[in-house]
Length: 113
Image: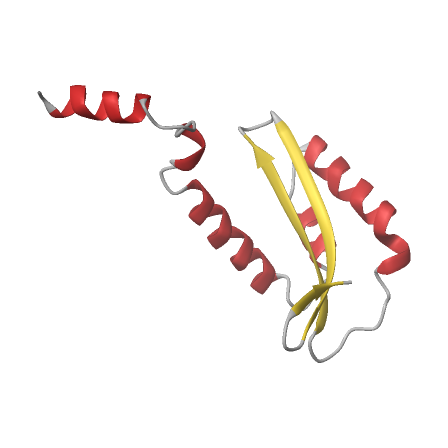
């Protein structure tokens, strides 16, 4: 039996879909891009930084909506082991947009507060 026939049979018999598990590095690329964005925005408000570099109107609207919805929490105290951040993703070009704002406290464990 050749390799293609074997691999097709093996994939076919898995109890879950494999398409979501193989991404040719997409998740690693996003992690690298987001890490770089965080470092570049370290001296600025991360939302402002992103908005200054976006041209996609829908992405801008998503981030502005996130800012409005989280405004009351954005000025909470920060310090050693306490910080805030955003995550933003656009899936399959313009199929779906997602943004989240998080305040985390890191001591012996990580707590989302």
